Length: 148
Image (cartoon, rainbow, N blue to C red; front, side):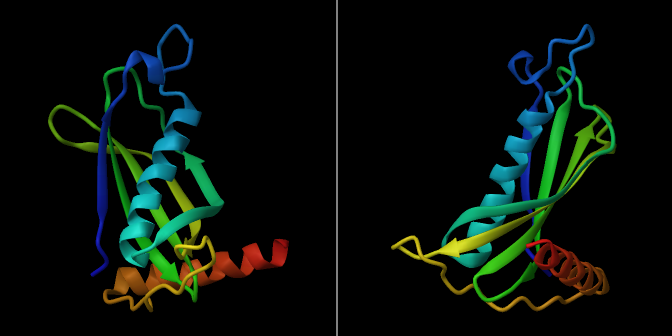
């Protein structure tokens, strides 16, 4: 089973847009996504990493001022020096139920001490869900490579 990296934030006034009903600014959420994804990638690769691309970032629902935001990041695929990370973002209610806010896929490149691409461990999906996500990651990679 792949390690899940979890992050928690409370939406504060400085994280919100200027609307009458304060909502979490999308750029703030994107920053949190990049940070937690990088932590998951660094843990997996055992190297520093750099963001190569944000493959998909879908906003499903808003988060509002004072909401608790939970993020879970997991590696879904790894190549020779790059890896893909999925980040799921939720709003957690006071009764601990969660509503999905966002799902994002990011690609990172592992870097050695000289800033050059470094090899990452082989990715071996264990569960049915991990194998399905891995197959989907390979399809996303193919699409990304086709856009170059």
